[in-house]
Length: 180
Image 1 (cartoon, rainbow, N blue to C red):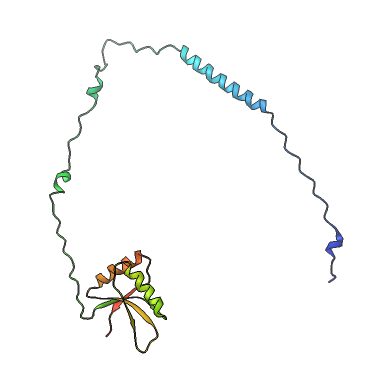
Image 2 (image 1 turned 60 degrees about the vertical axis):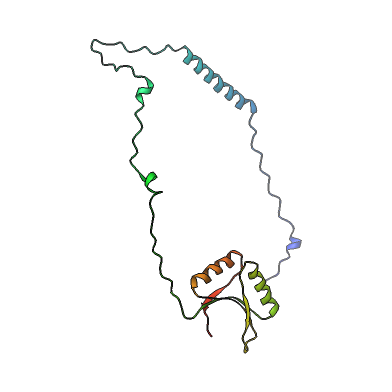
């Protein structure tokens, strides 16, 4: 296949420009608005000249209703069907709470494992600002520093503290039973 030289070939011829649409004449829309306005005014004038509708003539047998004043048309207010407004403040509800299981092995919550002691102390400081006490633990055979809260006798207490830390954007914290 032969190579083509697109530079020497030149540019394509210019496309013809489109003609602008013919302009509307502004006086036509003004004339239409004037005609509509005058028709509206004429209609109002004709309505003001219309006579009042005549009242129907009464026949020998009167079927007309007696005149009623506006206050007589309104029915009396309904009586109250419900008595909860008075009975609810006086009622007591008994709630039977589940018995919490007390485990022999306490729960702990770990909020991070760090390679350096400075990182672990920074996390411990963040937790202390939330009003919780934490400890830094390091196992003898490991090089990791763990930030731990607890021990908790109930898992619910650990969950409460974890939610408090989550609201303060301190995550992730895991809860498990402490292994001695």
